[in-house]
Each structure stands twice: as structure tokens, then as C-alpha cells.
Amino acid sequence: MSERRLSIQRLTQQGFACFGDVIETDGRSHYSINAGTAERYDDLARVDVSAASGRPVLSICRAAPNAPPVRLRLMERHPLSSQAFIPLSSVPFLVVAAPAGDKLELEKISVFRSNGRQGINYRRGTWHHPLLALERVCDFLIVDRGGQGENCEEVSIADQNFLVVEP
Image (cartoon, rainbow, N blue to C red; front, top):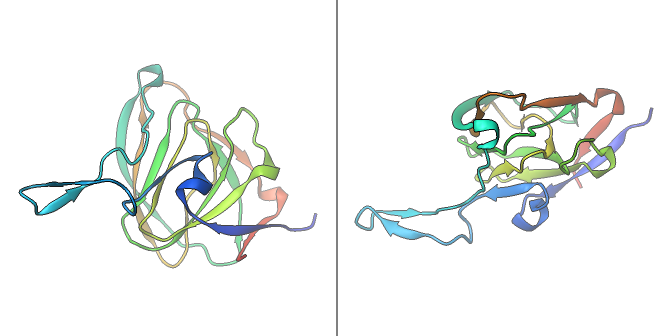
């Protein structure tokens, strides 16, 4: 099977809207707190974890870097919740997503590059690849769901030969 090449897009609110939220402060409303020593940015993502009596879980994930060219291995989705990844290292990383649905639509996979200060929040049911750190080991804060019920479905795509390339 020949390679299926996917070009990397810049991560923007508009370009990522069908998959979820881009978590960033640039261009977002804020207000002063702590006697004017800090700025607060509220409501940067729609956290959705309450299905089947779920509860929010905060975790830290340490992701190993991926050397180019990046080959996609698997896609997953969380049918009971959203899932957010906020970089703690300020290092660019790749975001791979496909529209929510019971079936993964391979022809609709998109690839985005975070500038390292942008996080993402996948909407409930959105298909996505596991984290793809680039330059070095990176830590991410994860906002996820805990509780009863199966909340992770995985589909191997290693045999599809997807290769991520610069535009």
C-alpha cells in the first residue's frame, strides 16, 4: 500500500472547531484578579465529563518525542466525555483528529501543529491520535473523566500507512 500523506495545518480556533476547543489565552477575554497582580481567562474549553455519573480527573502525562517522519499508529475516542491536553513545556506538538462518530472516517483525518502554548480539548466522541510530542519529552496536564463505564475505544491504523509531512 502506498503512503497516505497528511499535511500539517496551523492550530486555530476556527480550523479545530469541528473537533473541540483550542485552549489558549491569545485573543480571549480576561479580567484582573489578586489585587491586579494576575489576569484570569475563564471558560477556555467545554469540559464534558458528567455522563454515567462521571467526575473530572486531572492527570499529568509525560510524552516521548516522535522523530520525523511521523507515522500514525492508532486513533481513539472517548464516548462518555471530552478530553483536554494542556502543554506544560511550551514545546510544539502535533494534534491529529477526525470527526466524532461511531465509525472512524479515515479520509477526514486532520493534522494540526500547536505552538506549544495552545492546548486542545477534544469534544466527546471525537477520534484522535495519542499525543505526538516533537522536539523532546513533554509534560501535559490532562482533564479527563473518571467513573464507571467504558470511555476509550481504539482503532489501529498502522496498516493504513499514514505519514505526516510539512505542508
